[in-house]
Image: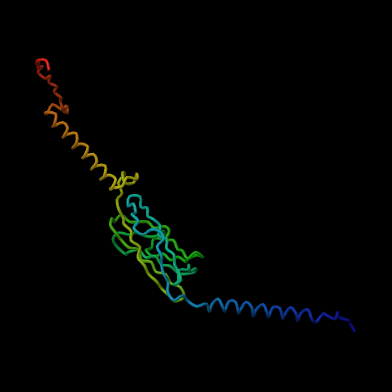
Amino acid sequence: MPRYPKDAGVRPSLSLFLCFVLGLLQTGILGAAQQAPAPAKLNIVIVEGDGAINNVRQRTAREIIVQVEDENRRPVAGAAVLFMLPDSGPGGVFADGGRVLQVTTGSDGRAVAKGLRVNDASGKFKVEVQATYQGVTATISVAQTNAVITAAAAGGISGKVIAILAIAGAAAAGGVIAATRSGGGNGTPSTPSTTISAGSPSVGGPQ
């Protein structure tokens, strides 16, 4: 009769046992992850894009970045975030031509609305943002404006700076006019004159 090593029947059994144990461990880990409690509430924090002014002529827009957090202000990864543009009026479309963009948050809890192309309608509009995670939902609005930006503004000169320069120029011009008028109308500012008169000598007797 053929002889088998003493541990020939032990090795297959040991392998099966190890596979069984590993399967239980994996099932337990996955089950624990799936049974993690859902957050009590979600918060959406606007990181960038709120109050931005988009250039209608160049069809450029600021990207909207939001961060999804739980009730303890911890980032929530894996949340589904919807960015929704208005159906009409000022607004635009995303890169795929649609007005709704879905993004999943990363490990930092952030979602970015990329590829926004504004339309040629000037005015204010709102981008509605909705985040959902394990059945919990939160919403927020991001305000933006489509505007025809002039060359001066595009060059970095704001309307407030232009107004300040205009006021300063007007004040300087008013000062020149006042000085001209005080000069008798000949265009030359008058200079105050000083008159020195000599006193009359007096002669008296010896003291």
